[in-house]
Length: 390
Figure 1 (cartoon, helix red, strand yellow):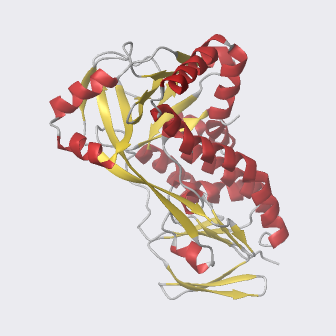
Figure 2 (cartoon, one colour; figure 1 turned 45 degrees about the horizontal axis):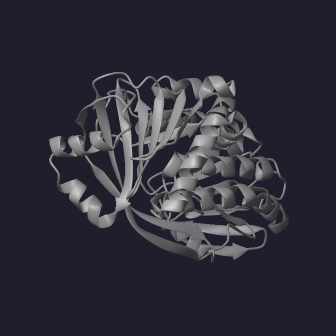
Figure 3 (cartoon, one colour; figure 1 turned 90 degrees about the vertical axis):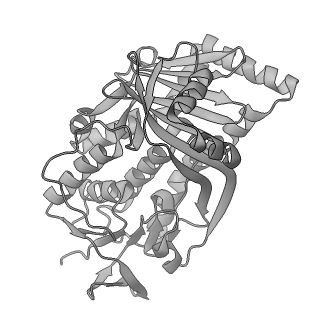
């Protein structure tokens, strides 16, 4: 008997990767529904850009891509992270985590989203067991015995034992599954831009904690770095109003002394930090993943990497399962992921707050913590392994 397809709604990075992982772990057929057109361009997007968004991939995420046979393609146009430099502005104390110390080839890599998307789309269209419906959208769903009947805007009806919502933080599919979500507006925005450098970054990623929020500089190919700076909305307004030269001057003054000199800045974009948590991640024959399940503060770049660990666990749990939508099966997946999600979610929310506290005794203890991490290899290594998703 032919298995009904597993249906994923949302063809972004999470949905595309999940489709590939489900096939890798035994799913006979997958249907991917995306509201925007999806097609493989005639030529890959290789031209370096000052205006492209990027994603930091942990060593664990790279291992997942390697297992799918996509790791080498991603690395062709990614910058390896060999060292992570963590510091606090205007205070003593810092730490460095290095690939050499951890005995790995690299701690992670940074890739522009358009290249990662190109690699994922190529694999999607090459897999005969994945059917891509794009552009198309859901017009409704109906619960039935053994799963859902899914109505598409194109007029087609699908039946599936498992409906997966991967359509973002404002997921309509999540609502149709009867799962509510909590939103927390942090009052901060993330400012993102690409930077050109006057010298090589040498594979070093910088995480710099400022009084108003964390600043990250992530290595990119072609002597560039990706900037992710988060701060109060009013201050981001001021940063957005600066000229490029003014923004570069202020940014250089906030960078660590040993960071490379900045040469230019691309288009600045801002994204409100509204953190979303689904009140549940599974219901009978339904599951939410990616940003539909949880969004994180961008500190340490853990959002996508946490999602990848979720996607891998889900694919391993349901991919070859004869009853992939049963509540017992989906609850087993949710329980397996609960601890990691809670730990990373809490850390990404509270670490930026802790570094903003100015009370002298607390600030002194915090700096001692950075010093201790730098001095004690075991403490530093444990932190590095968590960040690498290992």
